[in-house]
Length: 410
Image (cartoon, rainbow, N blue to C red; front, side, top):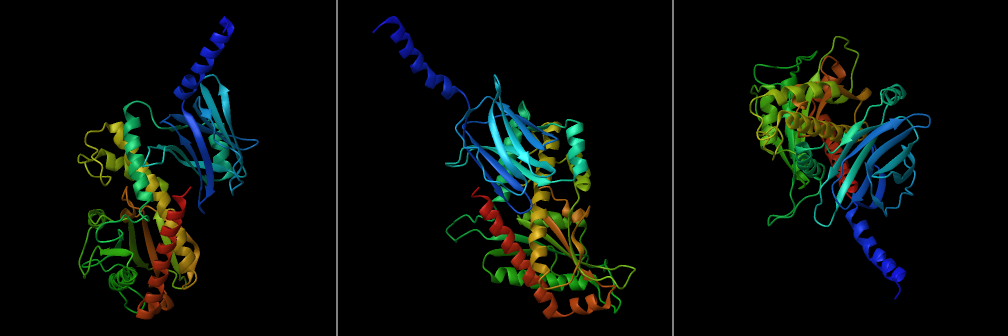
């Protein structure tokens, strides 16, 4: 064998080693999940990345370390994405370009560690946004960092794993006693010295919410799939934080607070579902991070050993994930409730209710109607009407957890 042949053979032998040292992108998939679109890239190892949007045409750009791409990027068109392109952008950097159909924001972006046979995954969740918000993000060149560097990366990886456990709550685990039941915390609003709203005919909100909560508990447990925990079982007073702590101690997968409002305009009637507003979430995350005792703000995680920066990131990420899940739950509930009862216009609403501010439990507040309206009050005082309403809530929960199970396949 001549010198050239020997060198050629040696070079060929070295190529696999060089390629194997480079992170691999082995698979990519995209799927619509109703309120959001998720793109997943399977990786051979953990990476750090950054993302930003570009206008005219609208694109989401993700910069990654140089990757060996074997993933098929010819994904099918979704509600938000028309095409995906990927490849080497410059030495040491690969780029993923997502062509957008409409104004879209990157609502979540993180890298999940391996679980069982599943490798590292880059997760990108996309949701619709306004044209103005998209243009502002593009003009200001806002950059989203994925997997913060340094010590934060390990902490965020821990949180990502905890978040995945939250999103897979619908996937019961087996035990000697059978599949794990989903735990739902039901919070009857008001109680004790706090009557809540008092209706046009003298109906008390605290009484109606407790009766409705007891019916919901019975219906959930009758399915055999759920375990329901009431924050109060009698006419007693609870501070708002106690309600959250009861749910977290359960530990609950979902928190549902039941209310029946009153308003000056007695002609207004209908049901609505509230989730936490992002503005309220940010303020609450900051307040939580400043507390002295941070050991158990996120179930299963001890934050006392983390830096202030890491605590802020973890609490914020956990609460944002809970908000996203709560929004999906609200959609499922409304889709079922509208078949049975009258809803307000724009039935999914946002507010900073304290009972919705748990950083690690997806939480919704259902305003079952207005006691200031005689029709709503009369209906809510009837066991049959409340039963019909609570049956719709059970179906909404079933729908939510079924969709969560399907999402785990993608």
